[in-house]
Image 1 (cartoon, chains in turn red, purple):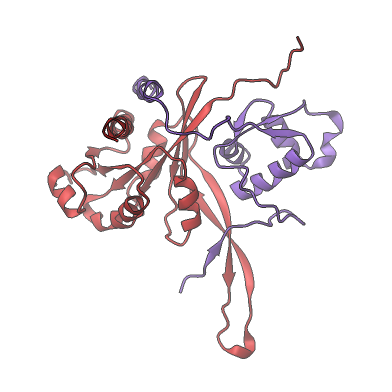
Image 2 (cartoon, helix red, strand yellow):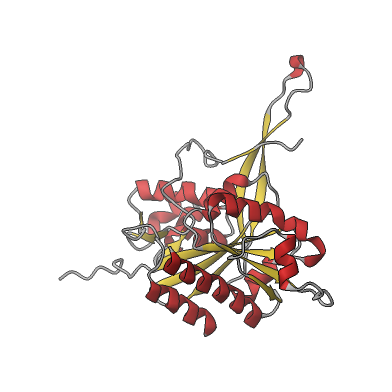
Length: 191
Length: 112
């Protein structure tokens, strides 16, 4: 039998998406558990210069770079878990769609000082039917909100888990991911 | 008003190939070792070949080589067309894992 050095076991990869408003701690959260430095880029073309008037309809193309938080956790030889942070700006929606396609689920990182920044992410996942969990990143001195209050403020369905976390703390972030996975497992039982 | 943003299909010269085949976490693998005269194909392509001597996902290649994902996809499509790398997506796209796999992932995270 011929030895094929390229007949290597291919691990199965799964994705979890990490969403949330600007500055809530997505990068920190991904970095807390990732085995690699979390950084990925994608280029997008923007069509610039929509004509100011009809006679000088100038069009050009400019390349803009989207930075994505990216992390990886090798579970075993057979399984790798990837974490993808969503891009900050709403206009990179094509990136959102691709990140979420085939993902296990999502973590929405929320900041109690700016809860409204989570609405966009929550609306997106609710409209797509993507299972998600909300992780309230507790910056020092902001643990004033009870989880129930956050649920009410975000107008979440009862079944959506809401947990507190410290995005800087590896153990805390592990619990967030485990919380999402256990939620997904529980939902299968109900489906 | 913010300018509309579109997917970059043509970032490498002359290429307008759709990149649907190379999903973010598709795994690619080289089909042969890097050869001495591979330098002619371009530095980044050689780097990809070297990296892909072991299975890599598209995003792994992108992050390791610090290249945008779209650029990596065009290069991978090119290398695949030349028979130098293979897209090794598992037979079925990662569907939902079975319960045992879910628990394995949970245990794996716990043990970090």
